Image (tube, rainbow, N blue to C red):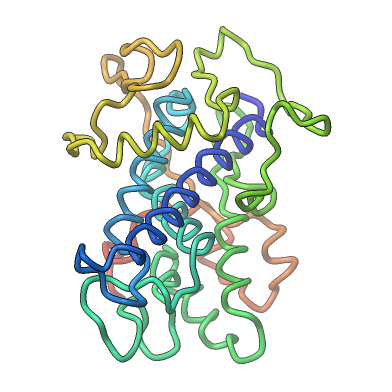
Length: 282
């Protein structure tokens, strides 16, 4: 699987989710009869659902799951990353409130944003907070996401979520534009759904229909609905064959070249990813 293809498809899906969230914010604020609270723009529940839909599209609809599903915690990690990026792309943190107003944003404690809690390494979180007076915490947090990789020794490759931050909506070029160049060539052997060939508006409509559909057991209903040329069997997870679970999330060396003061012995080797709430307390 070409990395540029994976990045391009993931960024396209993420951009459509940001567009949906921004459009929903406008509709909600313009409809006082619906009981919307002035100033309340985007709910965390909606952003979480968008992240679930985007994760399903990247793993299942887009066909990347057959490579990444063997990595333990990959879906949970990607959902956390997408949640953060959707929030970052559609509103300022103080504009993203849930149904309960508070004097301070509900996802922060003091000066610590909740996104720091998504980082799996407690020692790294502590070091980031300690140095946040001298370095931009948001930039360090985004670099943690960009530089998190996973080693698969059997294949001698490392997967990285993004080489660079995604292009923000609405600057993503459309295929009919003269400056548009496809970064990859499709291969039928990869058994992928050609999401990147869809018009941005068509992808937006698919996400909107899934947001309006009842939530299924996997968090997304009608998984293949609206995607051209996608038989049901191709985009559902195939659990018929047992797969080897690989534990090996770690930060790449490039991260520590940028932030040498954050280096910890526990981060130098492969470290299994799991949500920070499940990590054993020392």
